[in-house]
Image 1 (cartoon, rainbow, N blue to C red):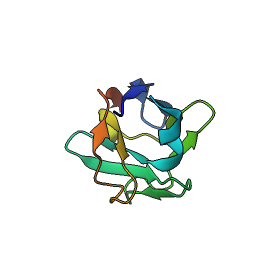
Image 2 (cartoon, rainbow, N blue to C red):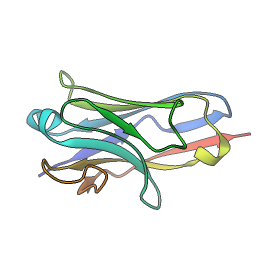
Image 3 (cartoon, one colour):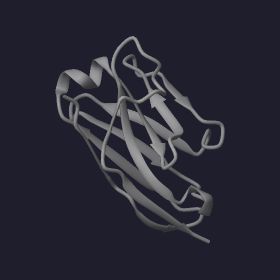
Image 4 (tube, rainbow, N blue to C red):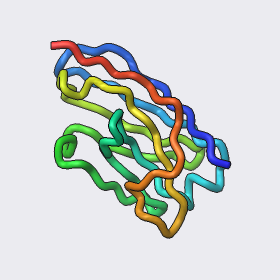
Length: 117
């Protein structure tokens, strides 16, 4: 069973930054599963595979950075140069090995980001 817990959302002005965190329940998962972030409407943002290779949606490339830390079982999303259109609830997702990473099988409860102009 995969449990994901997001945190780090909040309110920020346009141009500001936030870092979202996703705590993963089991240590073995962080090195074998693919993880990522999406926002409401299943709009994919970024993924990071088991080897640590990242992929990004074109509308966040250059602004957002996904990473993971096996020591803390945490997946991060660093969001810079935030825009009002980035306002959404963000979800951390996980996909089991051998499947398309962007087709998340598991996700957490979400954390809300509000960007004001």
